[in-house]
Image (cartoon, rainbow, N blue to C red; front, side, top):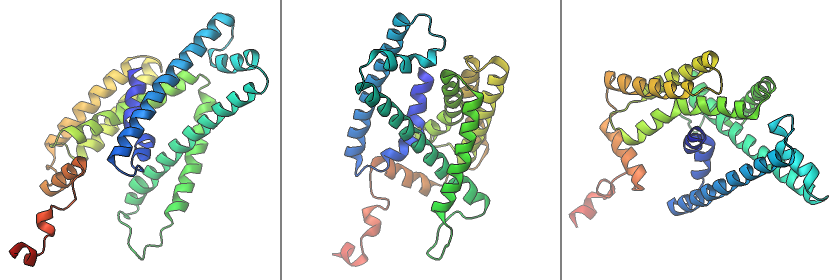
Length: 263
């Protein structure tokens, strides 16, 4: 349960929705409302699973519980609405996750590998087209993984183990520890992710060791590499602090004209 909670906390698809908010107040209210809804949704899922266990004790596959309840217990009409709602939720989540992954892959990884870190007025790079290509590639990869993993819980565990094991420590470190560096974050992502993948292959997908040791390895890598590399520039840290506090990027005293200052 903690793995899924941490995954929701640091998921880029969640953050990109927050960043579209009009202001901080809307972001907080929206986040609170969405979190409350997720709790209710989780309880509803547990109730449906419990009901299926009682009504269909010999159900072959636990993953079929929801579909079986809908098919056998709901009246015609309501049955279609529930299935349509479930499919729309799946499509919305899938599209959001694919767009988030494609954006990161195209803008933060592929663009840097090509030496294109900043867009200029004369830049003819088709960002939308690039994102579409990565969405297609990742969509095909996800389909392949879903075919290989026929168990929903196992698929979710793989996804959240890699996500949390690789990203939780560098994200929290970047928010809470001023001495952290970009090199430390990259090392943490790589070491944590590889540790999780290796231990899932050794101990099994549903084992607890992958996430425990993955988080530990990620933390050690983040701290060690950050301390071994040059600290982040003070101006960058100050800009980051102002951004977190909701303050203007440039202090008011620096934007005041000399004439106004003299007056």
